Image 1 (cartoon, rainbow, N blue to C red):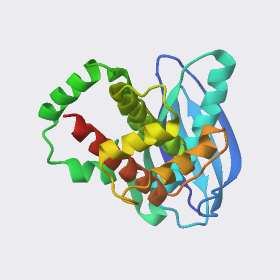
Image 2 (tube, rainbow, N blue to C red):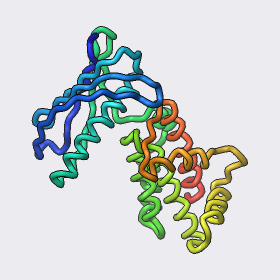
Image 3 (cartoon, rainbow, N blue to C red):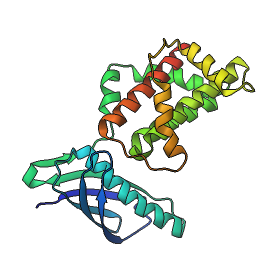
Image 4 (cartoon, rainbow, N blue to C red):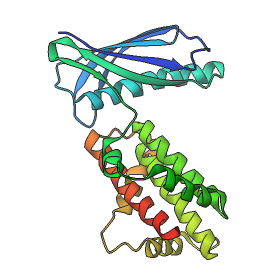
Length: 241
């Protein structure tokens, strides 16, 4: 059985690290199992994955990413270094796979590819710098994290929406009101019809992660979370401009 070979890097490269380990794993979303062998030499990552399952490369990439991130996070805890990692490529000759992972999320990028980024960026700078702009900044940062960290996508998606709920409450002068009232005003401000966007679904998906539990999601589940979150953020931001 030819392994999937994943190539990546530990950042920053100026802080050298070399470790190796192996383990068995199971993927709760698909039920697939396998074995990984990880070798990191001077920050260069090579991961071999042995599995009989017919994986989608993005699902398996997320498994590899989580395993390596967990080990690097442990090292970071032990020595006080703020490391990050990237998995950039996967190869499996027998399956005719040789794929370089991009940084884009097609489910977000494709519907937005005709947008005038320069023009819209100027408008958003105004919102970020304006009164209560700290909440807009928090939202955009969390959306970026939601795309980069698949194991925490639900957490960051919902926190991004919560930031906008705080922004809405601050603008309306109801920061001291109960959350239910704030969410009602936020929903009214967005103009969503009954059941149009499932904010509760995003909230429910985030709860386990927010309380320290694990949540392994499939590629389709992550896509749905991202699409729904962007729809909510787009609608709210459009009402501010």
